[in-house]
Image 1 (tube, rainbow, N blue to C red):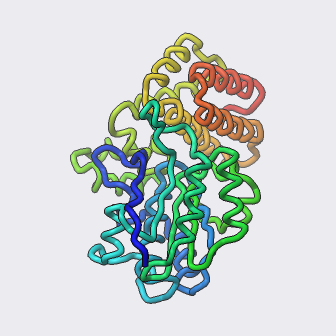
Image 2: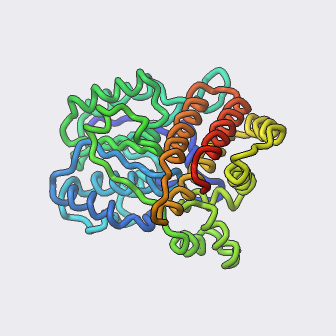
Length: 352
């Protein structure tokens, strides 16, 4: 087999400072249903050539993708390995995946802008086109090649069309794993050519219990508080635990609480703060969308409620924040637009 240079990730944007990268994580928490489905397909010898793993940020999508990759690279689509797709940490394939140096694994992310040195706002067509060369290479010893697109939400239109062509003529012994925070924004033709693995938000107790290992110095009250704010995402809880994550989550909750009468001056100041932060508007948007979704889910448990207007608002916010990140728009306008939309909805809809 011809050797190739290590394909490094341009920016470990999914690594939380002080914690392991998803490719280093061996434990997948609370996603037993999706894991069992993937295991049946892979160990049964009939895996799809494209998985679409969806769920909120920090829910474990990348950890899941690397778990699938390790198994396929170690055992292929056979039942030789463990039923839960785990691979021993000392397995040569697992060690290479952890190091980011396995020749049978490619990870596509937003690249670095050579002029600014900063992470690009979208996943470009030039990055996606690398897949054709990768899948055209001679297979490794295990006979499989795996590519992970993290995240497919970041693709621009040309990149999405290039990916679609690959899905239309998939190579043998190759698997493409797309990660998506909001799969509804992908081309319908891409979604239809992949099998879905939907990861669900975890309950607060599961998140709080998992935080014992990640935040050993935090007491039970702190862990429980983080779990309530995290919307079922361990990654979100860890983000809240450090840096400005807690403040952003509080701002998102404040915007929802005051939806009917937003404070324009405070929102302009928030927009300025987000502009100065790395991925500030994207992070705030994630917190706002997840906080609103959590309230909608909680309200939906009551009989006789009508949440159509709130659900429509949620979809619009997802589109607007995705557009802001993709086009690198000014955060203040995005925040003010979101606040106006929320105020209009609050006046017409049932209170959350």
